[in-house]
Image (cartoon, rainbow, N blue to C red; front, side, top):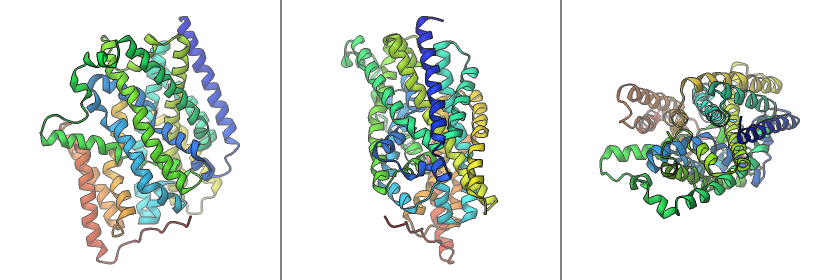
Length: 473
């Protein structure tokens, strides 16, 4: 092992120890499911903005987006960071305050209030395959980094990441997640800000560097007039922009804020910051086509760091990158674990105690992570894993969530019919029409259309449930 690899390995090992300590320390603050799932609803401005931003700024943004931008340019990464940032802004303006005033802990709690227990039970099952893919993407990114830097086989590196994340998420829940987020992302952003000007200077300035890359890599929208191109472009914005609105990890962070105002403006602020800083790995990926012409693009961000930064700065950046990935991973693990403990267990046992719910939240952590580990090792594409995960939420639950909040005539029957129709159309096109057809867009359109038609029909028969009124404050 070289001196640089030794420094990086030491930094990573030290960071793992710190993470485990934080998990143990945070566990002392967990008294019930509210503490475990939403940190007791006591986060202020800094922690609230930091944890929302950090949850999004993980494997897909840093590793996935830079690799995809290397191969496809900006049009290849519309979903993330642009669509993802848009999602945070939309969530802040139109949903955060309302949900916070409802004083619920999971998005399935909202579905239960709005559509009834049976529907919420049905919807809760949707989250399990979604988060298995999201968790798997984070673990896979972690494995790629350790493999690139220390030569550890990807399966072994992914297994190491899995073990550490499971331990501190199991112990500390949302408190452990929040405590690490702000510092982690701060270090990572600073590292990218250091790397970017060094690369640009080496390439002779930004204008000179941009001139060495085909112009289409900087196109922000399609240049051809075909309907299919624009529909695919619209899908790229929607797949995370609307598909992540029902995401439990986003919901948890908004509910963790101390007030409705903090929940709303933290989400909006995090969205703006995310688009801005998300451009760093995207631009680095594009310019790497000139700086690293022999690269395959899969690990381009790591390759740039190794080429342009000192061993000490590489160690700091890698530690921050791994921490950001682990932050996204533990958020993704905590989300379905919260739904299992808070919603699925109580659906099976309505009189389940707080202790039993908390026990199931924690017990779900290693089970979900183990399944995600298997998925990650079988499906080794970070960006695609993430996009497919959010695509499933878009076609299944986005319409019931949006209409449930903003259209009082939405009925339980309409919500279920819309979710089933959206998934059915998405699955049919995914299997038989190929990638050329924007299956996520058509799935969402079918979901919303069927929801409205069935709601209109069942509403006239008096089957409509009213939108839950938020608590005062």
